[in-house]
Image (cartoon, rainbow, N blue to C red; front, top):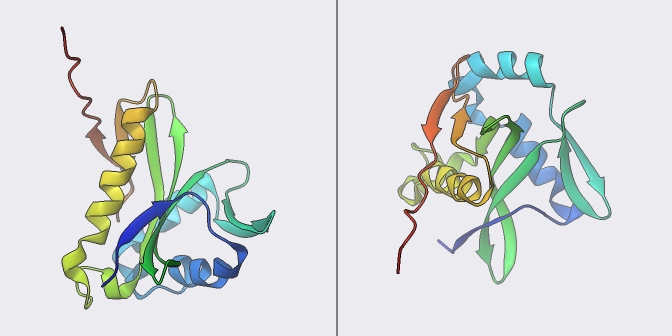
Length: 156
């Protein structure tokens, strides 16, 4: 197993990989309850290639995307994606997809990819001024809210 990294941008050649993760994923049955609700409220993710980069849109929303990639020979291979928007003081996670091999039942379950993805997003939330929570629709129609813990300021 190679190293897992996160990026907000992927080359166009990975469009099919992202489509497979989002739309043809065996894990979808676990979150079917929230997917219908989220797509009705925020729209269906649309994968596009803009300037030779993979982009995910939600009309009329402009979501942010983080891709989890496994590096093999310095080449990124998408293994996860998280799509989120900012609403007031929260980053709202709309869609999360994890490669089946990295799910809790997959051969690489020990990596804890979902946990790593959520930790990365919490790191993003800590760096964005005014964000106090991360709200996640994971299989539910009501999001779970996670408080963003900020480091206490040090005094000299």
